Image (cartoon, rainbow, N blue to C red):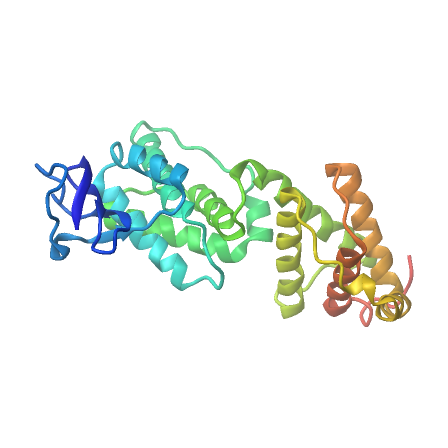
Amino acid sequence: MRVIKSINNNTVCVVDEHGREQIVSGKGIGFGKKYGDIIKPETVQKTYYVTNTALEKKLIDMLSDIPYEYLKVTADIVEYIKNHINSPLNDSLWIMLSDHIAFAIERKNQGIEITNPLMDSIKECYPEELKLGYYCIEQIEKQLGVHLISDEAGFAAMHIVNARLDTKMDDFYDRTKMINGSIEIAEYFFGKKFDKSSAAYDRFTVHLKYLSKRLFLGEKLPEELSNDKYFTELIKRSCKRQYKCSQCIQEYLLKTFGKTITEDELITLTIHLKKVGFEKNNPGKL
């Protein structure tokens, strides 16, 4: 690998034997290095491929300011997350999480601790990501000797959610509010709390997460279900109450967020509500 740019003593931008640009890091790897110098593979501890130019620029700017020890811990954490989550993650996770960890430690050193106002909502909507967030702060304490409050696990979880859904942090509050609101409407409609340990609940919340992503990115499901009129009418007849509940959620999304959902989304939501299985425990009508 040949050096394109030395970022700091521990990080350099290189081009490999296939002509691919990448950022590599290792203790002292960039010390005294200049354009055209050779980097030996055995000195590389971590390699980062960033295909997005804007992300690469942000990464280079960030790497020059964040201590190498923080970057290494974050890289280890992200690798763990990738091995314990069943969906692709945006390249931005390592960048945004490194930046957040460095800022959180800086705040801690200054005696400043920030509570996370969305902690209860994160516990409700993103338990898997929150568990990984707790792993994150555990590793920070274990490897860096810095104890962060549990709210920081919530902030880490927010970054994981955004990387998982490929969305922006600015949308996180509205997406979380949308998911919570939809669950509350369903619980009120059927007069019963969800069984949060059930597989049906997990599938329902996952559907709501991806529905929120589609809504806030302006994406739509392909118009497939609604093209099958027989199937659509069958669902409406056999799942009348669930379809009505879906319409209530549809109205909530329109009034609260100005977002509309298609007939395909309504039918899909109805099917998920049916699988949750309220009816057998609550046969009465509103």
